[in-house]
Amino acid sequence: MTLLHDLEQTILSRKGTDPDTSWTAKLLSKGPEKCAEKFGEEAIEAIIEAVKDDKAGLASEGADVLYHFLVMLAARDVALDDVLKVLAERQGLSGIAEKAARPKG
Image 1 (cartoon, helix red, strand yellow):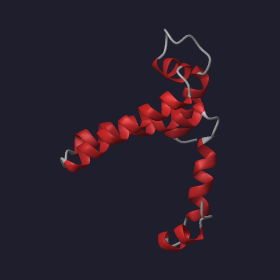
Image 2 (cartoon, helix red, strand yellow):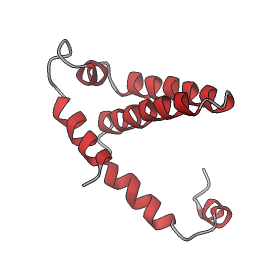
Image 3 (tube, helix red, strand yellow):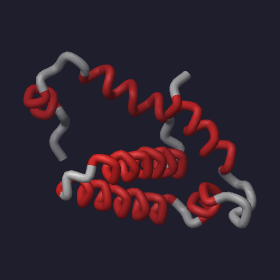
């Protein structure tokens, strides 16, 4: 198991627990839309750090992005392994060819 899998399990263990005792539980209790909004906010903060060329800031915000991505996945009952499976299927493909093969719509 990877660190991300461990984090995913921690996040899943907080689903349905008291929102007053856990930031993760609080986020999840607000619903998938709020989790997605928070992920977006963190992604923007990471972009800002990348543009500023602040490596330490980007590493910190990158950690926040990964955490909030996993929370967003958990809020919609999507497993990290589902995402990793898609990445594995794309491995070795040209990004241009992979994108062209995606269903339109």
